[in-house]
Length: 145
Image (cartoon, rainbow, N blue to C red; front, side, top):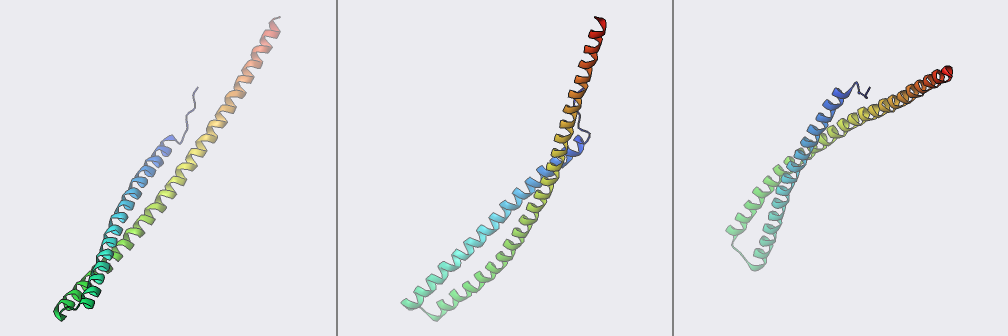
C-alpha cells in the first residue's frame, strides 16, 4: 500500500494559483520597471532642458526662445506629473501582486507541511504494522517448535 495524500488535488490547485500569482507578479514588476524607466527618461530630459536654458541665459538668447523653452519645460513637467502617477499606480499594483504571491505561497507551504506530516504518520504506521507482522511470524515460528 502506497502513500496517497488526501488533499493532493487541493495542493495542486494551490500550486497552480501560486504559479499564476508568480507570473502576475513578474509581469507587474516588468510593467513597473518600464513605467519607472520612462519617468527616469523624462526627468533626465527635463534636467538637460533646464541645463540648456541656463546656458542660453548666460550666453544671451532672445525672449522668444526663452518662452519656447519655458513652454517645453511646462509641458514636460505635466508629462512628468502624469508619468509619476502611472509609476505610483504600477508600484501599488506590483505591491498588491507581491502580497498575493506571499499569501498564496504561505498556503502552499501549509499544504506541503500537512503532506509531510501525513507522510511521516504513514511511515510510522507502516513501521508499526511491520513490527506487528514480524511479531506474529515470530510467535507462529515459536509455536511450531
